[in-house]
Amino acid sequence: MDIKKRQIFIFLSLMIFLILIFIQLTLSLEIKMSKDSYQPRETLQAEISGNFISLKSENIMIYKENKVHSEPIIQGLTKQDRVYYYYAVLPNQEGNFSLRIENAEYIKSGDIVSDTIIKNFTIKQTNESSQSINPGFIFTKKDFSIKVKALNKDQDISISFENYTYNIFLFEEFEELVPFSIAGITTKKSILKIGNYNIPVFIVNNITENITNQSSPISQIDFSIDNLNAIIFTNRTYFFSFYLENTGEANLTNINLTNSFNATIIPSKIDSLKTQEKAQVNLTIFIKEKQKKNISGEITAKIENYSFSIPVYFEITENLSKVTLPGINNTNTLSCKNIGKICLEDEECKGQLTPSLEAACCIGECVKKKTSSSGNWIYGVIILIIVLAVVGFVFWKYKQKNPRSKTMDEIVKQKVDLKKINRNRPGHVEEDEGEY
Image (cartoon, rainbow, N blue to C red; front, side, top):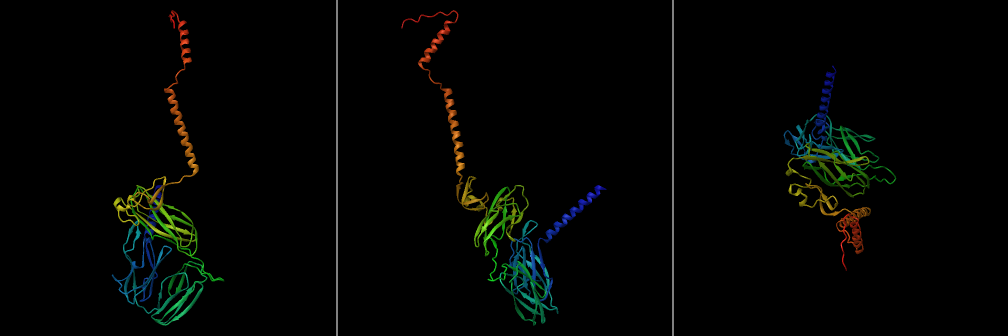
């Protein structure tokens, strides 16, 4: 019985795990419209979420049946907090339509694809009152206005923004430019309600009412690149460089840099970045030989309650000729020998570092790293000890092979001692030394 329970538990756990993965993959890319059926000339609003590498307004098309709508469409697109907000004033036609995202690269199951994404909707004339608004979202740092037009009939339209609620009356086909103020609003995002529309309002500079009526400064960081994409080979270290720029109105401090794919970022923290000032950021990643799956993630710069990020995607290839790094389009230019030189461990680059096939490539000069005076003193003492030891050893070996010559007194004394020894031996006969 216990074995069966264990098997059932394992089976249910596996099913839940697979369902969660399926849900995650399903929700990784989504187009959420305000509704599925519209009247002619109404404003379509959509929120688009997903792992897009790049998405621009020209990638989003309005189709009728299977043909692109020929008339110009008033539309807009903005990205806020990883969500794309899109709006379009629909044509004065009825039929089956679709919103299509074409030629936009996004990550699906770990791969970069550009498949067409389709969201169907209908346009049908009814007797119900409706409005047209323009624009369908607001991104501002000052007071703004929105065009509101009554369709089908005269209307009493309700408007609600922050703590203010009021009505405006519009005759059929009459358009009015309605002004709004952001004074006193302290939130980054707000919702403006006009009739049946919920219009997102993104305020990049919160204005506070005070004596001087001055606005608080904006915190804004821009990456020098929109994304970081590369085709890379395994068992190699890759180096990438980009810049962060303070494009806001205030000096920034304590900017933390992180990534979600186990790379090394230097510096990981920028203590200070003045307005309009740039800071170079270097990213290094080692690709293990066993790495088979593509790598995706993001680089994030965070300051206080704000975060700014760019997507990252590394495609793993087993063909060295297919390696492609940012700004490099052929294998010949991948080698550092064609653009610069690789500095040794005891050298540093006096110039610009750039990615290459081998490693970080120095466009400039490689110079010896400076060592401290204390380090030089220690090295000097060690070298002196080694020299003295070698000299002592050589002198000792020399003395062993070349003993000093004896003096005359030592030679005479040696002969006398030898004669004494010989006299004491048995049978010794002393020879006549003769006359000198």
